[in-house]
Length: 136
Image (cartoon, rainbow, N blue to C red; front, side, top):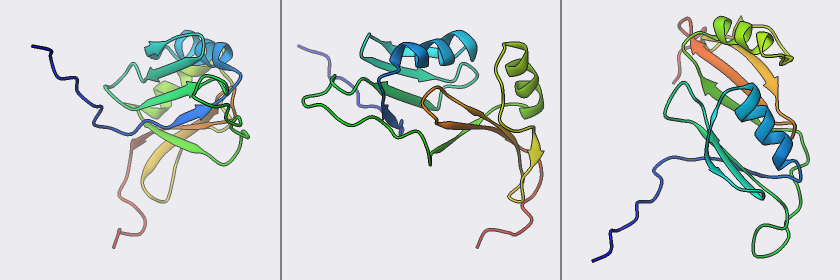
């Protein structure tokens, strides 16, 4: 009898890109993330610090019909880390160029941002304070 396959139980956004190789180099080689799936036309990576989150990237012609590539703006993916300041220092040591320095946001996150080769902004954060305005 065949074993029933399990569906994933979490979201992972997928970006269509012609930069799969550059994306692999950024996430796996520079950030130190783990490739969950790694082919020439499809890459799925996850943060090495935690079991999630995951992000996927696919070449425009890898699906059943060609799809337009991500335009490179308007997406922020928040990534929890143990310490945003330490993560920021590590990113700089690895030769990455963050687009912002760590700071506490009004919602209580201390975070900084990196831009991946596709234009996706990664917001690395840890909870540092109570939010300035309580959620309703």
